[in-house]
Image (cartoon, rainbow, N blue to C red; front, side, top):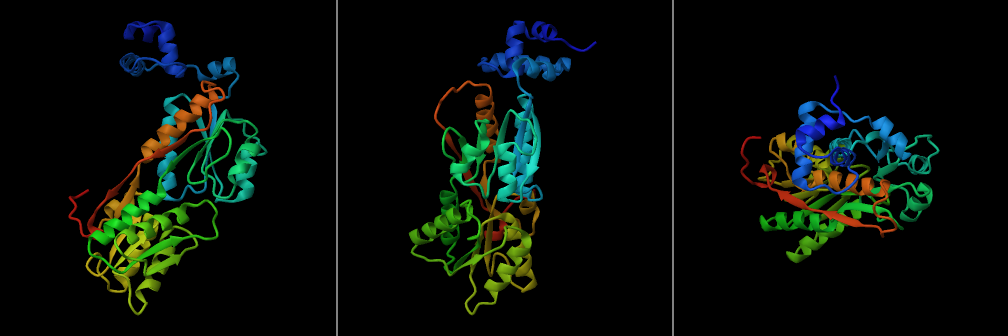
Length: 339
């Protein structure tokens, strides 16, 4: 026989109401009590009737997750973490990708795609901040990335300027003096590349340096990184260090350097951004800036849950900045233990 709510309550030594509050994430419960209830849920294999609960509360139990790409290792990993965080709170996630296309972002926001969701987490590349609120029509929304939305829309982001400054300072601290950047994207309006370029320049300026080159790319994937590195190495005075605005770009650059007979890091130090798994297993392993993806996911889903459940009323929008860290590995000269 399937476990019931009162079975969980008896095993955990709490009231049925407390169990209900924990499994529905409906109100604050003391951490120790929550842990005890969740342990009982796991032991008994209890599964709440989410469909019935959502029907009573006038919700679908569905949330939308809209990202520009799913083939990107960064967005793939982030989507997985967001889905995990949502499922822990009893949500089912509908995943959509837009390719950064404005028409798709707008259609998903205004509901013309026909999906009925209780809220949405979106990483927009093309929709302007002012449009986000008007298109969503009051749908609870959390925005990821650099575009700061207007109104009461919560925003979870990384400080890209500070993160890129950290990267530039790291390369300068190694004694590198001809440092280039790869990853500018002037055709896109979401601001990521511009912020990373700004931080990169600041970090170099603090070391008394200026970029020897800043290479524009069509996207942040491997082929463009390889093309950009070949361009840099063909210069009369090639760089002795390269900061790529994504790990995928850096992996492409790493391949191009090998094809040109340049050693990494001896001839050219190389680092990326995102801390994707491939970078950890590359030869040499890739120095990178690691955003706290777990915290991005957790904070975004928590914000959305609070908005959907109406706990915040008319509380103004929150801007949550998650931390980052520098992971120094072999591509800039650090000794690294086996993965």
